[in-house]
Length: 629
Image (cartoon, helix red, strand yellow):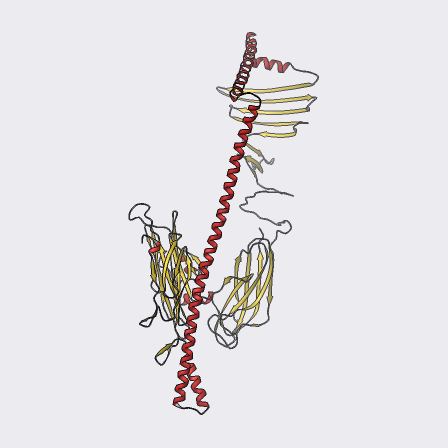
């Protein structure tokens, strides 16, 4: 395919062996489109593709014939040969069955649908999704995770997924749908590859024949029977009157059917035209918005350029107003720069001459500076220093101990005292103590060493406190009050832990031991317990339990779910309740509702059959415990 506008296809419908695609009242529409733009003729079923936004795209077409909705998947994928001919990456999905047949009791026939993903020139990991027709996601993950979660039956490997009739039936019932969309996707570099297939319920309907015309709903036969019964009860059973009644009913039925088909076609055309008008209006509004943005940007750029031009002209006018040319101003600036350079050279020469004077005395600048500093003792500054030291030598090894006592009395800085002990072994092992106090430094005590230890005086060799390599080690500690920003604790035995206000967990819930009857109707939920909690944003541990008593005297299936703020967060899929009171049913789960007030509800139902009297449950509990952050 070289261009999208040349691509088209057809949606064909067969009733038995007869094709009823056109001329039989079938109406066609687009049920859904993902990453593409498609259209379908509402009368003929011919569809076209005008745009594909991604490398993989999917559309679902719908046909309505004789009151039955029929869906058809359409997939398109771009194949990019970035590495040369024969390197295009492709992902396709195939299935053994697109439908699950149901019997007249609305039960699925035993069957499995095997979905197989085929990858071309890619080894990227696959992600599987199960969606509704409206593309909202029911479940996603690897094939193995979908099997483990109960949404699929089995998986031979990461590229296959098997769904049997029981799991398909549960998916449809749990989510109120008649079709399931299976999607597979992988990301290879910057390229996204995907494909989708839809599997539908094939529901068996009772068909009766009336004058050689198939009636899928049986309405005509029922109408005839009722009409015949009314005539018979009145005692007017005559063949000619019966035939007239049948002819009249047939005429009325055909007229009503034609009117319904005509109305359906009109509504389909109207919906398509309205959708096209809405899409055109959205695109027009978007174009107008972009034009306004472009105009605004250009006005801003023009204003900026005008400002720069005006500023340059103004500066030139100022120079011109002095009667001095631009060249003269530049010459004056160069002369000023030369004067500054000459001044710097003169300062350097003067400093060099002063150094030469010091050299002429035969004394270095450093020695002269030290001598001056040592001779400065004024009424403003008085110092006293005493240094005591011992030293031993052995070969090249020298060790020494030096003690220094110093005081300073300065009218500016006040009184300062300092006592130091310096230990030196071989020039590498250096340790010491420093005590100092004064108005500027306050009082300090410093230990200069690589390792600092406080040794137990009992002489048993234990070190209760030490600092080694910048890390502090304390063997035993008793701390009255502590403020710790970051803590790493491997093993801790805590007799009493005190937390700040509002830091403990919050618990809420309710328990009721009385009986409550469930709705006898299949898949109609009854709320049996609830509670509310005000959370601060931490995770909430949810627990629920109940006792079930059969309402029919026999074993039955009970299903339950937990809702938060009206949305289902836990679905049991199915639970077995025995006759009489049995073992309580319990469940716990972790929920992350976020901060604020939240309400939780426990609901139960019959998921498979309806009962004259529903089951009775008692001892219903529902609770939550938040672990605050």
